Length: 267
Image (cartoon, rainbow, N blue to C red; front, side, top):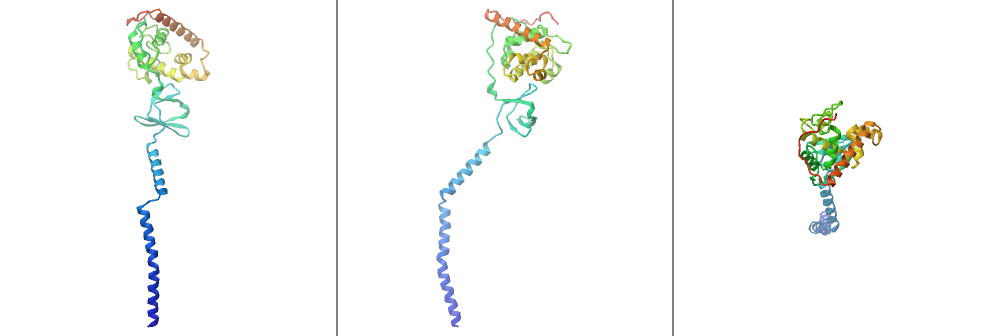
């Protein structure tokens, strides 16, 4: 009986000593819940900031992807992969080989179209001015190219099957979705768009852009400059001569002619 009482007394003492320890643990937990430490709070803020940053980070931003073939694609973003670029477009994602992408250009890098001048005394002057204003290409340059390409004959056809005022090849017609290559408005608009792409591609180097318009961008890339073709060299000289005449006429204060009558075919 005494042995059982001693055991009960011992148990009572152990219970008495254990109670403060349990109370202390509960007190520490309550403090942690009621007053979180500065370290915990700072850690939470860092995690939150990192999450918001990652959630808000888009793909690398750009407005236009300039391709080696002269095409300019409107994009909302892009991602650089191992050997390609993943372009984010309105219709979805498109992967393009890295070697086919020349540059990425923000939309605001293209200057505003120059104000139209009333000094272009050539046929189809209104259409030329409209295309120049729309695409940001010098109107005298467009007129000079037309003069050399077709002598303002909208029905001109070359032995290489280049057609219309700006002598568009079949692949150019398809690229710009031209439905009637002999329609002056469509032909001038597509030819001007092509000129704009070439000027952008060659960093506004007019000689290279015109050489590519005449001989093709592949030839310019092949020779790393103006190809040594007599036809292309002569083409550059003729366009330069026409451009000088238009600029001189503009300085002299010539008036714009809105005639739609083509000049005689020189081809």
